[in-house]
Image (tube, protein in one colour):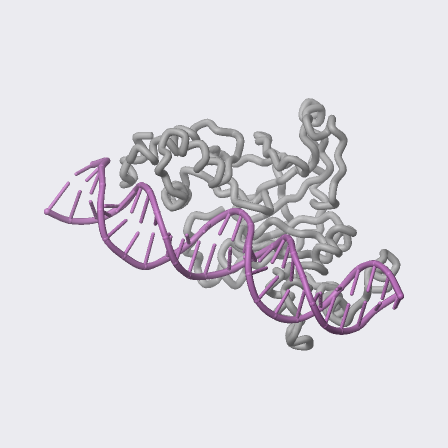
Length: 139
Length: 139
DNA sequence: GTTACTGCAAAGCTTTTGCATCCCT
DNA sequence: AGGGATGCAAAAGCTTTGCAGTAAC
């Protein structure tokens, strides 16, 4: 929270609300989710402010922009390297804090400078599994 | 190609061109890429046809819709389970046909029905690595 | 002859941008 | 006071949809 000021960002009430919502949040919200939540307290807040703040946070490495939902970007305040379970039905995302110790052959490393990796496990969450999953074939 | 007819799809010249372009294609093209390519032979083709065809193929499991580029969907005719290297700079995508044999704890399996996984390695491709990579912090 | 596909245009969503005003520092 | 942030509205991309005409079966 104070780190915010330290890195040269102005701490406005709107941003404070966004930060509070994101802090410890494991729901991997979209910009829309964040907007809807913060709007309860700041009915006048605009998407511009939400996107602007998210971009500022992302640029400084304080949040991660996830590309795991084909429909929209999701944001994750957990910047610790970790992986994700994605429910194919309800699109919920769950953290997987495990180290899988993935190593690629030297031969590959020569042709591509690998800086990191991210595993997406896809399947069905408990709720959607119970209901029985008529999938449309998407992966 | 003939499988197309077998599964109840009409084989039009436009679709044939799309199929030909996709066959063996490892560039992971976007809808725009496909449109631009097919347009050389069929100047009148529309995005509706491209998207329509891609959706028909995806629904039948003949192609994969990839969610690895934050800006747009990419399509992959390689439906064999495999992983990807993504260049953070030029967004090129390279296949990784290796089995990493990832296993998750039983405890996790109980709470989530895992149907598959996909690893994205991110980093810099050979070309972009040479140029030196001023990144904007995106992952 | 049917039915599905095509092309076009319009619309839908998510995300970005320009700009005048405001307010955090 | 100064510069960044805000809210609004418009615009930009990507993707979807409605519809009338057309072509594959």
